[in-house]
Image (cartoon, rainbow, N blue to C red):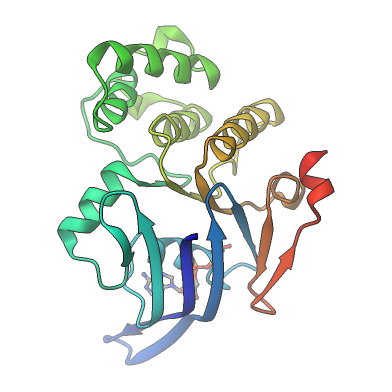
Amino acid sequence: MAILEVNDMGKKFTNHHFGTTRQAVHHVTFQLEKGQFIGIVGKSGSGKSTILKSIYRTYLPDEGSIYFDSEYFGKLDLTEATERQIIYLRKHEIGYVSQFLNVMPRRTCRELVEQAVLEMGETKAVAKRDAEIALMHFELDPTIWDTFPNTFSGGEKLRLNIAIATVKKPRLLLLDEPTASLDEKSKQRVRDVIEKLKASGTTLVGIFHDIEFMENLCDQIFDMNSKQIMEVASDRNEG
Ligand SMILES: Nc1ncnc2c1ncn2[C@@H]1O[C@H](COP(=O)(O)OP(=O)(O)OP(=O)(O)O)[C@@H](O)[C@H]1O
């Protein structure tokens, strides 16, 4: 059974001040089974982020449906889910990583990762252990674990962002160019975590400008230009 089914989804933005309407995306259809990864490719402004934000319900689509097979609620249309359901899903089942760190202020790096684990119902001891493993994996220096991330470098913020989202092992993970300014070694670290999450059943939707990075991880690629799925040969996934 599909974990995520996007059916003929569309979203337009109206600017009341200028009296203009822009169709950001139109006719988006794809489905994902448990543990699959779909990559979205297309030129700048073609609506890639709009698709992710519609699934996360930052935006409410005005056409089509987005069915998510929730562990807690069962199958539900995210375009019709209540705010309470969306809040629950964001906390427990659907993760979103962008290039920007958007976290509670005055929480240390370590506390932020621990908090993410605690939200999944784990004990304090497990949260401490998993947070340290994640921070080490993403090579955040222990000297900054107990400091506030507002002074972190761009790359450190990105790596912390990915650590917070992935430590929860969400059922569905949305990745909006999270590796944009990372070096090759850090990208490899992100790839390792994505591979582990896939193997443990996390379903992923991702946008990466680095097509090579994406191709070897993805089961499907959605091309914004043709609105078609390009199947990725399975031998490429094994390589
Ligand atoms: N909140 C918004 N209000 C108005 N227009 C928006 C909004 N969000 C996106 N758009 C418009 O929708 C279109 C698609 O934007 P989107 O960010 O989804 O593209 P993208 O493919 O992710 O681009 P990029 O690769 O440059 O990040 C753009 O024309 C953008 O201006």
